[in-house]
Image (cartoon, rainbow, N blue to C red; front, side, top):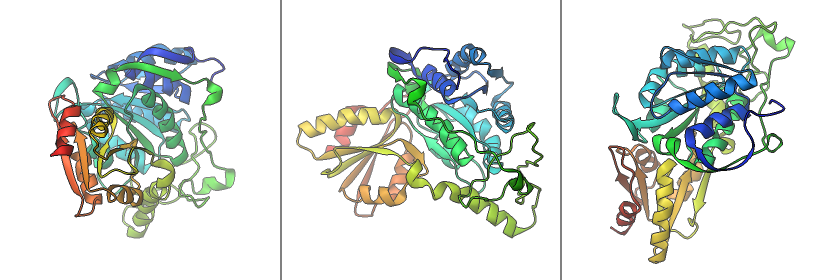
Length: 383
């Protein structure tokens, strides 16, 4: 953390969502950014190009998104907190290296400012079509962390949290926002450095270097060596043993490795998963939403309460890992669930799997860059 940030702290009345993410990354200690311009995430690259030189950081515009994440992974292994940012089709290109980051346990932050698809889709229109891609787009059994802000201030705070979680669990963290939040301008409080908790990287002791991928402390998270600081360690995306060397034919080695990669996230789900319940204690109808649709749901909730409808909102700040035990308890305490989304039902399918057969789950879907309106949600509740 520099003694002086390259921007003032305090209240900003009118700050751009992508800019807030870039400033938060600097505050979190990010000192390497690699990216490729893509709407509606390009402003993150632009702001980082202005801020990084002021904190002796490095920014590179790469030839494409696949190379951008590769560069960020390399920088992380060199001991620098790193980030890349893109939008939906670029995120698709990153998936191969996202899997590499999971397998090599590389802390890195990936921002996806979603836009409409598939393929090139609608470059300037927002979407929430990448939920399942962010969670399960990487092949093989794996786990990672996916955060979802619904305000510009949350985008700022969640970016800092993304870096902290990446360092704590040695895992890539996806900040899954959308074009609406990314291009929204809102009042944001940027805290002073002394108000912010920043997670530091845990490096191994000398005796732990003989097995740099061993669960030395029983938490499933090996301390991370840093290239160029006297460490000698082999890093590979192949199935590897605790020394880091390829071991691709032994099923026991593969099972032990993959289970540890998954369980280090699952066993900490209560610490990672966060949510907000609004008027949900006495609700008969529950809206479940995230991102920009959570904003709309709050307005719909106000209309419903005025009509005497016992409605509530479950706002998800983390899309993965999900605390299934908690969610089952919440969603099965109501008679009906309404899920508004800017897709054909990605969160809807997750909630439907959790809900009891006796609970009706209703999708309120909008495509083409359109956001479900409060009226859409109210009508779905009253139907």
